[in-house]
Image (cartoon, rainbow, N blue to C red):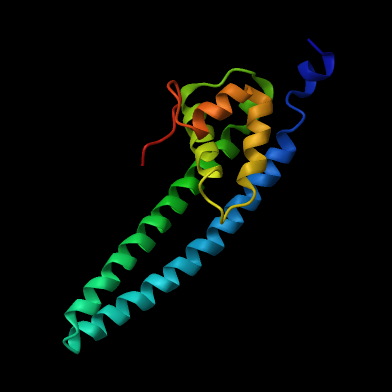
Amino acid sequence: MNLFYIFFGWRKASTCKRLIKRVQCRIKLLRNKRDSMIRHLREDILQLLKNGQDHTAFARVGQLSKDQNIVDAYELLDHFCEFIMINLPYIRQNRDCPNDINEAASSLLYASARCGDLPELPRLRKLFGDRYGNRFANAAVELLPGNLVNRQ
Protein backbone atom coordinates (compact mmCIF):
# COMPACT_ATOMS: atom_id res chain seq x y z
CA MET A 1 0.00 0.00 0.00
CA ASN A 2 1.23 3.46 -0.82
CA LEU A 3 2.64 5.38 2.16
CA PHE A 4 0.89 8.55 0.95
CA TYR A 5 -2.44 6.72 1.09
CA ILE A 6 -1.78 5.51 4.63
CA PHE A 7 -1.22 9.03 5.93
CA PHE A 8 -3.60 11.06 3.80
CA GLY A 9 -6.24 8.60 2.57
CA TRP A 10 -8.36 9.20 -0.50
CA ARG A 11 -6.80 11.94 -2.61
CA LYS A 12 -10.09 12.87 -4.26
CA ALA A 13 -11.91 13.53 -0.96
CA SER A 14 -11.54 17.30 -1.27
CA THR A 15 -12.94 17.18 -4.82
CA CYS A 16 -15.82 15.06 -3.55
CA LYS A 17 -16.47 17.54 -0.73
CA ARG A 18 -16.47 20.49 -3.13
CA LEU A 19 -18.85 18.74 -5.54
CA ILE A 20 -21.23 17.79 -2.76
CA LYS A 21 -21.31 21.38 -1.53
CA ARG A 22 -22.14 22.50 -5.08
CA VAL A 23 -24.90 19.90 -5.32
CA GLN A 24 -26.33 21.11 -2.01
CA CYS A 25 -26.30 24.73 -3.20
CA ARG A 26 -27.98 23.79 -6.46
CA ILE A 27 -30.57 21.68 -4.64
CA LYS A 28 -31.35 24.63 -2.39
CA LEU A 29 -31.89 26.89 -5.42
CA LEU A 30 -34.00 24.33 -7.26
CA ARG A 31 -36.04 23.59 -4.14
CA ASN A 32 -36.74 27.29 -3.58
CA LYS A 33 -37.81 27.64 -7.21
CA ARG A 34 -40.14 24.63 -6.98
CA ASP A 35 -41.53 25.81 -3.64
CA SER A 36 -42.41 29.13 -5.26
CA MET A 37 -44.06 27.33 -8.17
CA ILE A 38 -46.02 25.15 -5.75
CA ARG A 39 -47.20 28.19 -3.81
CA HIS A 40 -48.44 29.88 -7.00
CA LEU A 41 -50.02 26.68 -8.25
CA ARG A 42 -51.95 26.27 -4.98
CA GLU A 43 -53.21 29.84 -5.27
CA ASP A 44 -54.26 29.19 -8.88
CA ILE A 45 -56.09 26.01 -7.89
CA LEU A 46 -57.89 27.86 -5.11
CA GLN A 47 -58.99 30.59 -7.54
CA LEU A 48 -60.13 28.05 -10.11
CA LEU A 49 -62.20 26.22 -7.50
CA LYS A 50 -63.75 29.49 -6.33
CA ASN A 51 -64.65 30.31 -9.95
CA GLY A 52 -66.25 26.90 -10.47
CA GLN A 53 -63.63 25.62 -12.92
CA ASP A 54 -63.26 22.26 -11.21
CA HIS A 55 -62.01 20.36 -14.27
CA THR A 56 -59.13 22.78 -14.84
CA ALA A 57 -58.32 22.80 -11.11
CA PHE A 58 -58.10 19.00 -11.02
CA ALA A 59 -55.72 19.04 -13.98
CA ARG A 60 -53.46 21.42 -12.08
CA VAL A 61 -53.56 19.23 -8.98
CA GLY A 62 -51.66 16.59 -10.97
CA GLN A 63 -48.91 19.09 -11.70
CA LEU A 64 -48.90 20.15 -8.06
CA SER A 65 -48.39 16.54 -7.01
CA LYS A 66 -45.49 16.10 -9.46
CA ASP A 67 -43.81 19.29 -8.26
CA GLN A 68 -44.22 18.26 -4.62
CA ASN A 69 -42.66 14.86 -5.38
CA ILE A 70 -39.69 16.59 -7.00
CA VAL A 71 -39.23 18.81 -3.94
CA ASP A 72 -39.35 15.72 -1.72
CA ALA A 73 -36.73 14.02 -3.91
CA TYR A 74 -34.48 17.09 -3.67
CA GLU A 75 -34.84 17.01 0.10
CA LEU A 76 -33.87 13.34 0.21
CA LEU A 77 -30.85 13.96 -2.03
CA ASP A 78 -29.82 16.83 0.23
CA HIS A 79 -29.95 14.49 3.24
CA PHE A 80 -27.76 11.97 1.41
CA CYS A 81 -25.28 14.72 0.54
CA GLU A 82 -25.18 15.81 4.17
CA PHE A 83 -24.64 12.22 5.29
CA ILE A 84 -21.71 11.82 2.89
CA MET A 85 -20.23 15.10 4.14
CA ILE A 86 -20.47 13.94 7.75
CA ASN A 87 -18.86 10.59 6.90
CA LEU A 88 -16.22 11.94 4.53
CA PRO A 89 -13.41 11.48 7.10
CA TYR A 90 -14.32 7.78 7.30
CA ILE A 91 -14.58 7.50 3.50
CA ARG A 92 -11.22 9.23 3.15
CA GLN A 93 -9.42 6.82 5.49
CA ASN A 94 -11.19 3.50 4.80
CA ARG A 95 -11.62 1.62 1.57
CA ASP A 96 -14.66 -0.37 2.74
CA CYS A 97 -18.19 0.96 2.32
CA PRO A 98 -20.57 0.26 5.23
CA ASN A 99 -24.26 -0.12 4.36
CA ASP A 100 -25.30 3.34 5.56
CA ILE A 101 -22.65 5.07 3.46
CA ASN A 102 -23.39 2.65 0.61
CA GLU A 103 -27.08 3.64 0.67
CA ALA A 104 -26.30 7.37 0.53
CA ALA A 105 -23.64 7.01 -2.18
CA SER A 106 -25.72 4.56 -4.22
CA SER A 107 -28.76 6.82 -4.09
CA LEU A 108 -26.70 9.79 -5.30
CA LEU A 109 -25.27 7.63 -8.10
CA TYR A 110 -28.75 6.49 -9.09
CA ALA A 111 -29.92 10.12 -9.17
CA SER A 112 -26.92 11.08 -11.30
CA ALA A 113 -28.40 9.19 -14.23
CA ARG A 114 -31.87 10.66 -13.76
CA CYS A 115 -31.54 14.25 -12.51
CA GLY A 116 -30.39 16.46 -15.33
CA ASP A 117 -30.91 19.50 -13.08
CA LEU A 118 -27.86 18.46 -11.02
CA PRO A 119 -24.90 18.35 -13.43
CA GLU A 120 -22.43 17.74 -10.58
CA LEU A 121 -23.83 14.28 -9.86
CA PRO A 122 -22.22 12.52 -12.87
CA ARG A 123 -18.84 13.80 -11.68
CA LEU A 124 -19.60 12.41 -8.23
CA ARG A 125 -20.53 9.11 -9.88
CA LYS A 126 -17.09 9.01 -11.49
CA LEU A 127 -15.38 9.76 -8.16
CA PHE A 128 -17.29 7.05 -6.29
CA GLY A 129 -16.76 4.66 -9.21
CA ASP A 130 -13.02 5.25 -8.95
CA ARG A 131 -13.17 4.83 -5.18
CA TYR A 132 -15.34 1.73 -4.87
CA GLY A 133 -15.14 0.29 -8.38
CA ASN A 134 -17.19 0.63 -11.53
CA ARG A 135 -19.26 -2.40 -10.57
CA PHE A 136 -20.44 -0.47 -7.48
CA ALA A 137 -21.39 2.54 -9.63
CA ASN A 138 -23.11 0.46 -12.31
CA ALA A 139 -25.07 -1.54 -9.71
CA ALA A 140 -26.46 1.71 -8.31
CA VAL A 141 -27.23 3.35 -11.64
CA GLU A 142 -28.82 0.27 -13.21
CA LEU A 143 -30.42 -1.02 -9.98
CA LEU A 144 -28.57 -4.32 -10.28
CA PRO A 145 -28.83 -6.89 -7.46
CA GLY A 146 -26.76 -5.93 -4.45
CA ASN A 147 -27.34 -2.18 -4.71
CA LEU A 148 -28.56 -0.27 -1.67
CA VAL A 149 -30.33 2.57 -3.48
CA ASN A 150 -33.04 4.08 -1.29
CA ARG A 151 -36.37 3.19 -2.93
CA GLN A 152 -38.04 6.46 -1.96
